[in-house]
Image (cartoon, rainbow, N blue to C red; front, side):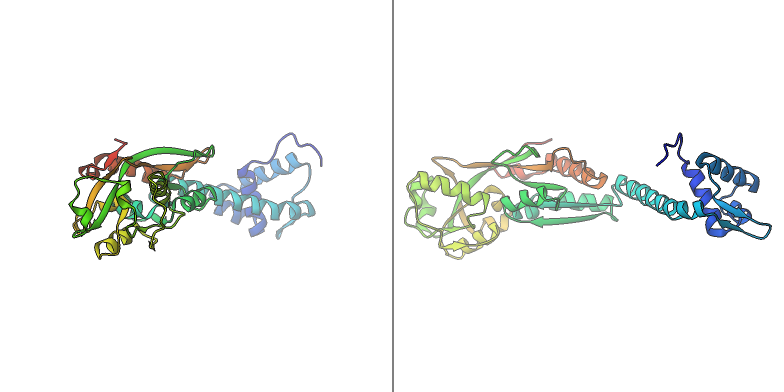
Length: 316
């Protein structure tokens, strides 16, 4: 392939394609809002640049020369791709037009995100939000596989491809039915749980892993009698006399749910976890995702979650 000193400009390609489609210099000039002489001059400059004739001109019509036929299909595709790229760039740069995908823990979806989503939707009603709640390992996997722009979860094992910004820290609480014998104790330690039916999350849950470590350290090895997929379900089952459990503070934020059980801060040892916003390092966010993250952090900084003593907000 010969080395070209210059390539045709986008404008020259637009003029060439317009003439080729319409087979007329006058109609192409009208379409492009330019004079016929300027358009003819642009075609001549393109032909000179390429060193070949692009059109066969007669008094009646204008047809593509063999070299013009080769260029035409490719020039159409180049201009179409450029138009698509520009359109997608503008769309991506407007937070009100795009989409943000969030992977998170179920408690985050129900206790942390709703206010931020409400504010974001009020400002950007045409933008869309997709929230996918799952267990901790799956949340991180979804982010790493490109299924989410942002993830909100715990981050116990640092990963070099993930940037993590802590947003809140929470303690774990013992819960039992209101009339359970342990409800009379002012202080509950892990050894108190031995031999009592326990309601828990599946082993893939991050909270379950933290709880199991503390239980084993205390010499408690019996498995949970219930394993359910949502922390709010754990609270409901305990409230109905199904056993006892340990839950993170976010599970007890709802006063109505909290009144259904007896709760005490779990001590000896106290178990805490940190939740944060994650994104892939080196991967730029769309304007929509960037704006949602900004609103989320701003909202958290003003949120009253800290009125519950087991939660500490780490932003704002």
